[in-house]
Image (cartoon, rainbow, N blue to C red):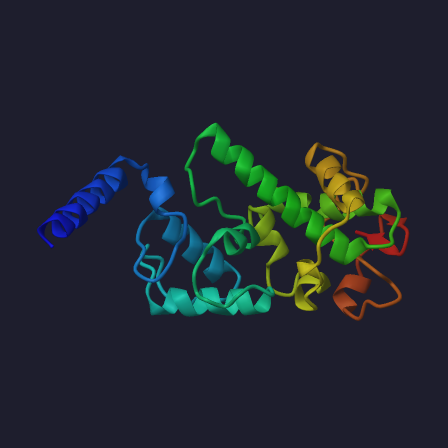
Length: 224
């Protein structure tokens, strides 16, 4: 019995030592109830900008933040557990495991690419390849505009911005062509020539959108 207790004590000491040696980024892979810090502030800012969160940006993951995360997850076809793990972080356009390192930047870019490809697949499936790139370019043009959120995830998940988000098609797995189109747009190709909007004249109902001057048409989409 004494030997057993000593073994348990040694194991507990080893766990504590290993935990102390691990970088903070590894220990904090997920954001959950009780988490604190700049990443929680970033999360709160995103959720507030998109209309899911109404509390203060205090960097404390409390019940209000948890409820907002659950609502976001339900809206986007994710497991509504209130925990920001890898899948929820990707949907939010967040990188949880690093700050400003080059590897972190690469991971963030990869997440943005896949999210943009999902948007392209949901919005422009069946359109000509040039039209798919143009849809992706519109998202990137909005990111650059002061009139829209300044991140890809922020633009895509802005309330009412895209039908694919509203009807859930954003959650479909993008095909290779949609991924290539997103990558081409991120690499600088803009067939829309700087447009901030597009719509399908056959299905659009917004008078404001229909009143905007059409600058070009690609496939079924009018760009303005």
